[in-house]
Amino acid sequence: MRALISVSDKTGIVELAKELRSLGVELISTGGTYRKLQEEEIEATEISDITGFPECLDGRVKTLHPAVHAGLLAMRSNPEHMKQLQELHIEPIDMVIVNLYPFKATILKDGVTRAEAVENIDIGGPTMLRAAAKNYQDVAVVTDPADYPRILEELKNGGITLETKFYLMQKVFMHTSSYDTMIADYLRRERGDFSLPETLTMTYEKVQDMRYGENPHQQAAFYREIGRRPGSLVEAVQLNGKELSFNNINDTNGALELLKEFEEPTVVACKHGNPCGVGSADNIVDAWKKAYQSDPTSVFGGIVTINREVTEELAKEMIPVFLEVVVAPSYTDKALEIFRTKKNIRILQLDHISRKQDAHAYDLKKVNGGVIVQTVDNVMLPEEEGLKVVTKTAPTPEQMEDLLFAWKMVKYVKSNGIALAKNKQSIGIGPGQVNRVWATRQALEHADELLGKGAAKGAVLASDAFFPFSDCVEAAHEAGIAAIIQPGGSVRDQDSIDKCNEYGIAMIFTGMRHFRH
Image (cartoon, rainbow, N blue to C red; front, side, top):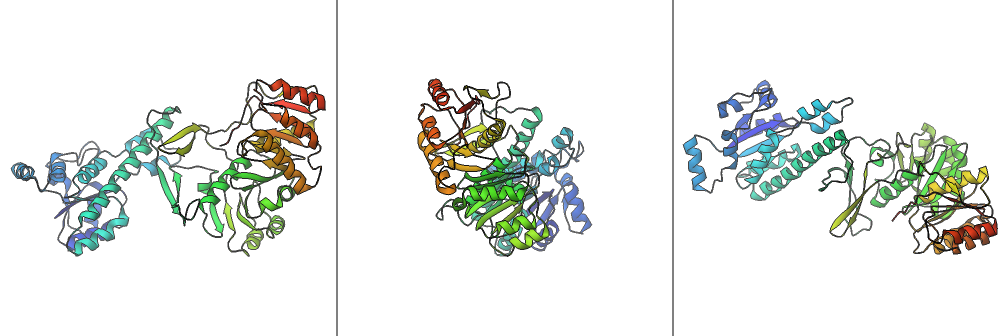
């Protein structure tokens, strides 16, 4: 039996090679792997002795030779193949142990040049892997050091099974597909090509398996994009609590993306993908109080994200409340001591918590039989036109602050979405309704229920899309809403403008909507 070994990741390779030699396996090797085996005094044949041709072009050409690929691709059950090998004096190769040039590690280095990245595109490795995998019935092909124990165990018990060879074949094509996708994505970014391509291939690395998905009968895992993603949940460090669930991750991501819209001390609480309490203040403790007091019922069992360090004082305020997840850029030692008195609360530290997504990132939604893709919604207001006051009454400076606060909130509320705000505090949210008037009424009812009758008097209202009728303005007037912000763009905009003028409500058009489905 002959095995060809050529690995960039040398984890466990010495131990594997020793075991293979003890089982009588003849080893063939290349470059740095061959030198490593020589240092360990493990008998191996250099690839140039097999090909009869020296490595050349700074090692770019080593294994690209018929003596290698015919030995891999010859079907042992095909007499004509075996006859040709004999005539060409080529011996079969029965096992390939190869992993590829470290392209990912190269492009993740600070200051890497395009030339360095391109030089770390493996050519011979993928070719050998694919050749061996194509002939999986006769050749075992190993790309992952985690599989070394399995193949050794089977070799010691009579030989590598066809089932294992088929499993290894599948891993090869997953591995080379991911490798090529990384290269293609790197080149796309290098060229500044942010169009939606004719074919879309993406690759992700598994972060963890999960106990279950959205519901207990669903399987789930968490994957991350290749590369650094500062400010994203995949970069968070967990300091306390159980592992994150599928729903935890989904909800926390929504809360984080809303938090990134604020520069002042802000706390965002989220439940089932919708914000349920948002507060901004001069200090983070007051911001928490605003967020919590706006909807204590929904914050219970929710996700909380914070854009300032969590202090002992803040932790003492938060600890009586049952929370699933807390995310902040840092924590004092005393704050962590307090949180750790509850072993299940998930405490995450996320550097660069305010860093927004790459403007050219993809937003994907799976549909049955396909996927719909768009760029992320990373704009809050249009740059050119800006805000437009469309009523006789203009908002006061204080109302304008609240209008922008509410606009940030409603961007992250499921459509149809309405958000109410007063003094930089959410006071009512109407998410995911099938018509806008229901969303408006729900937000107003929540304000009265949670903060007392008349809570919306003097508050502002934000809508994620235009008002097709004046009924939402009617409802807002009855509750005492002082100002409204909405995209505009309905053929019946004037109806809403006239009603606002009748009631003395200030209204602003943004010229931009933020649907969230």
